Length: 70
Image (cartoon, one colour):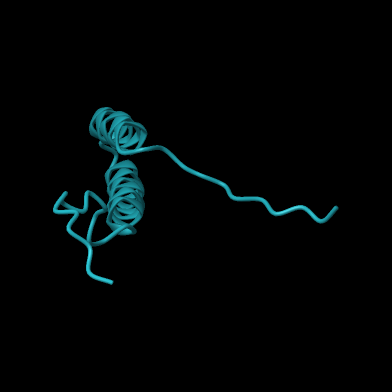
């Protein structure tokens, strides 16, 4: 049967893109903070950590999926 529904599909093409961007942002932020802390740039490390944390929070934060058995 052919459908005549012409509404666009609003589902994203890459549903895991947000997860990858969030994860990559967090990892880059952590690496940058460690490098800056090891080079004794504590103010810069604090700023990068705050910006990285805010970016991860804005992009969706972290999700934990738990499956329980009845």
